[in-house]
Length: 150
Image 1 (cartoon, rainbow, N blue to C red):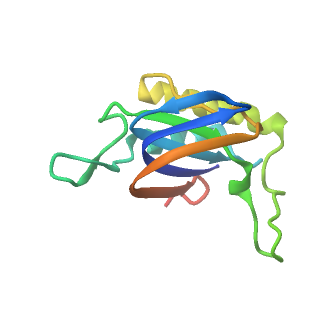
Image 2: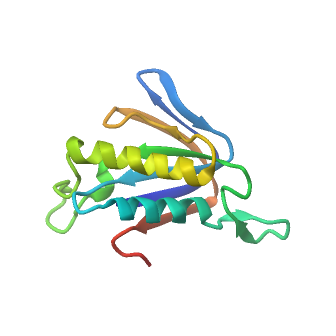
């Protein structure tokens, strides 16, 4: 499972003209899922996400988590995070999970984050054509892969 985490001033996702998720200050999280992902990967990433200290404290040091600042989290599925560009110039998405596996794993990840955050999270709609808007704060963008755990 892969995450691209962006610290934002605000973010939203729109599907067919309807806003399906919207947050103020917090984290926009793009999620890619592959068949080798496990519930442990989901739980580990949720813990990392909620406790990642990337918000400024009173001294301007990134020392606070989204939970510390009572920020929001917007989670958007994105199969293209699993792209392989090893051969040629057209990315291969063979590593991206099919719906039967990915949807329950995505929903479990969202639930894990909700539980650890202690409040609802906002989401897009799985496999929909989504328009994502954000104002990246910093910019701060972090990539985490549960299979690397670095």
